[in-house]
Image (cartoon, rainbow, N blue to C red; front, side):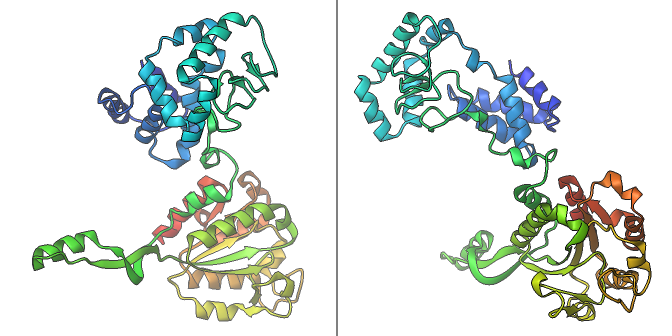
Length: 396
């Protein structure tokens, strides 16, 4: 009976295998969930989904497979009244607080609630909106949708409004993790997690379970051992192109910057305009009087840093190839010289381009920077592009 569900997951491009499907069936056979739709949903999601990027796809496949609740007719609901009483009571105990269960007594208790629902289904002949008795919408009746009642039974509504009815799986809380949609701070963090180098430093505050077991066995008494917390020790230099043609990309670059600050504890950032020259800056409002010499950056941060440039690489070719080609000042050395110095100082380097990749071949300056850094060292600012870039940095 679950084969259509399995087929829908595969159709949604969720890499679920027969092994996961059989494990799911074993869980059902073992009785891990019984008469519990939420439990069934979480069991299926836990077993079937191996990558958090696929959570939203799973929700959609789940909804597609088990849709139809909103089309239940009064006759169907009357038949549902034959469900085991102990199951209905367990559902009420699970999803209603003590205060809400007390309020149900205002209607005469749980038995009275179900009895009244059955009676009103038999009496009602048409659609109803508003009011406080009939099954309908936007009212205060205990039955229906888009209204309010603390002891309600939702019928025909695609989402919870007051969180007073049973929690459903159509909320799709993970929709921004899907790698087929636009970037956001949350899913950028998912992509940046590919670049990690774990190290333990700082105060020994974390329990070392294996060390404690070994020390206890050796000494004959409980000998608790602690160790420093494991942290991401990757060191990152972030160079951000600012102004001009980068203005349309401000929002997505801000999201990338915010995610990188959260993910990398050892990160330094600097701004430049169009191409790297003899000076960079930390504060755009003081870019002319508080520049940091690029030579100083090159001699301060060692080759163990991962160097990431973020920019659309769209400029006049003269800005890269010739001294004096910069459009804001007279540069003594060509931008290409500075880019090559950065490339040589930080062998693990990457250029993230927010411009759509299909336009790259029409801009000569992009081709020139790809030739300096390497074609595989420039990636688009998409979730898949950033993931590919992080893998490239991991390799060196």
